[in-house]
Length: 78
Image (cartoon, rainbow, N blue to C red; front, side):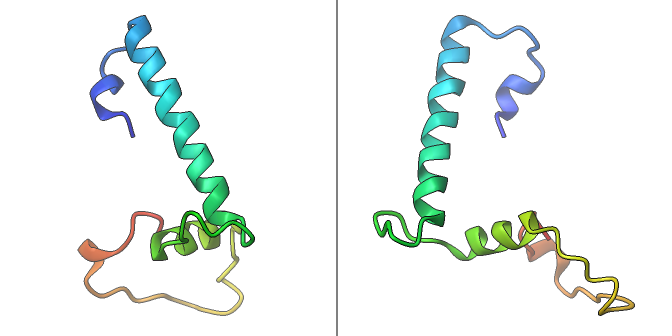
């Protein structure tokens, strides 16, 4: 999700440090969100959807089709 760095294949050391810090902070927040004992960071609705996506559910046995209304408003994991 570092759009401003995607077109630049060679990052400066400052950009690399920035990305590294941001990724480490993101990982820390995610670990706190998924730890049910840690209440310092709340799990958001988007977080629940991401956990569901990561579980790789096989919906093909249960559903023949899934209809989606207002698709422009859905979370990207859907």
